[in-house]
Length: 318
Image (cartoon, rainbow, N blue to C red; front, side):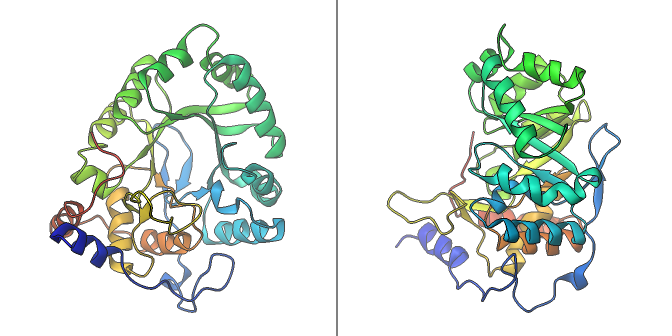
């Protein structure tokens, strides 16, 4: 075992806590159940909870369980919910669960369709499943290549649907999610989006040199910056089993509260409006605790995160 492998095993080792309740919370009370802070969404008037509820949380859950999860999140102060058709049955579960709170919440959805016809159908289906007449934010989902961007903005591309939906009042804001710096920057050059949804993660940032360029570009026009992968640690090696079925990477270990706290605070210290934790429900209350006691990361803490980042392989890098 080499030094890097040893350090990685030390970081990600450990035993998960005993679970109970809708989010698998233990008996320990979380930050005296403080309400989650809210931040303005870029240049918009909307104030979003700094932790978002990823719709994948309710994927494959019974409806009663999904209802309880959404109710608990709302009671804690969460008003930002994000979902996508690619999350299995998540839209079917989130629609009924969110309905009692819909008027007081910010609902975001996405499409992976790149052409007009497919995007029109997917938007209609999402509105129907989510039991709403409009989306607060509609996003191009997971744009990754230059070809993706060019297709979206070409005649007959998905962006025609986006513009019409905004004009017709079916969506309020337009945005995108991306896993590529080049695609994200090109998309921002093509159109002045209201938001971006991008991986902002200490390992990718420090070891992968991935993220800072996109964040700075978004700040130039005061876009709402929404963060993915705040609790990602490293890749799953070939032949390894996923630690959690709703998470395709290795997250920060569930029992390492110090690193969990630092990872969330790092992401929220980069000018982001909000961060969406991993799809594994165990991580949601952990992220809430970190956000409830938020303070910007210090120079010493950043130095520690940089050291940890150099010991593991980032899930994204330039």
